[in-house]
Image (tube, rainbow, N blue to C red; front, top):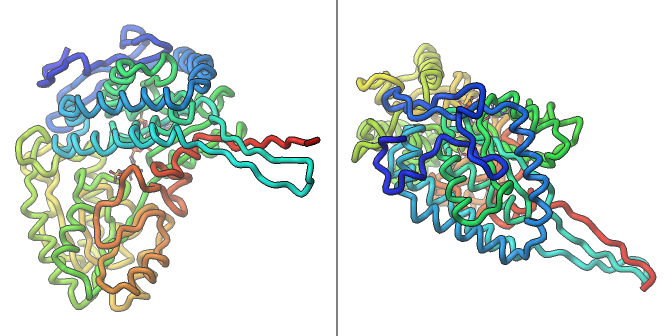
Length: 487
Ligand SMILES: NC(=O)C1=CN([C@@H]2O[C@H](COP(=O)(O)OP(=O)(O)OC[C@H]3O[C@@H](n4cnc5c(N)ncnc54)[C@H](OP(=O)(O)O)[C@@H]3O)[C@@H](O)[C@H]2O)C=CC1
Ligand SMILES: O=C(O)[C@H](O)CS(=O)(=O)O
């Protein structure tokens, strides 16, 4: 079935999980080939399910929900916890599967899996703490009781950049709240989702509660948006598709959580620890080959240290070992596809044509395919393309600024507002800048900001809702109050 070096080969499956059955390409009219970006080889072919099968999955979720929601939270929590433990125990195998379809280095794949399995553990705990309220009312003979109830059948549409983690982030709170969830993973990276379904079954997640469907995105998206049995859609991906989901689901007023594009600014003030800022920028920019929604897209550095910062960043970037994710020592894998390379080159060319200077990198990598040299530019200005569009690739542009006010104006000059970062040792500036940045997540003296205890999500066109933390489960709950009279 696969030549990947797995301790447990049964974790690798090309079958979708629908209504308690495993459906292969033979059960569908067509298949979707999954390609290894490291060498272009075909890893597997998953089914392109017809809409009738998708409707079956939705009906199975609807039918399975009452029993799941009625189980004591402690029981749902125990199942989520078991699923978490199985993921952690099998993290090496899951990393192999992830790297084979996505390209990131094995260590990063493992990191993604462990860090995001933590959302299952976190929400297993939160399941037990979905508290209501008793509210005093203006009438002496009445009380208002506030209950929180599961929102209904949920659908998740997830991207290729975190094929494992974006699923546990959504499934954790949904299942904890008492909701079933149907996941449609990215067509480029469905195998991680399918392996999670194998482990969910082993953990005791009942049939219909966690299902994975693969197929034509627009067809699945339309069904999710228009099927009356779907109450909520949680999406991570491009802003364009996020807007489409809002429009398409408007008639049914579906609940939506949207984690969309970013264009994160990374500010380095003249009082910052320069080496720490370089280290943070390396993580915020080059993790996952620059393909994270919280990637530092624009690096603003005080004019007095901009050249020194660019040289240090360029030197660090030039040292990154580029190669197949499975090769020991690899720090940057291939980009997901050639379209990603084209976008990187368009941004690079535009910057160079308008006067930016190359500090390091700047070309496709000798390995060919979608490998690209980690690249650092200086002398970048705010009018260049890369200051306004998410590059989603290993391109680090350094833009000099003179004053804090100017840095903030440039940082906030975007329709996006997911993440922002800044480096300073000045306490007053920490609060001033932290409060002024228009972003849902602000990293202060760090380039790594996500964890299960924190609310992850954006301002402006970066989306709606939050994942993780005590706030994350609210996205999967409805508030109801009982007005009890005649007391
Ligand atoms: N916020 C983030 O983490 C991410 C941001 N992006 C940004 O988006 C850009 C484009 O990446 P891309 O992969 O095209 O992102 P998309 O938004 O197209 O894809 C993300 C997910 O949405 C699905 N999808 C696409 N069209 C529809 C539709 N009409 N209805 C329902 N689901 C749909 C995809 O399915 P399928 O794979 O089958 O097409 C995939 O599962 C990136 O360069 C980056 O800037 C991308 C990925 C993640
Ligand atoms: O791209 C994303 O969705 C996030 O960047 C993943 S992470 O930063 O939370 O790992």
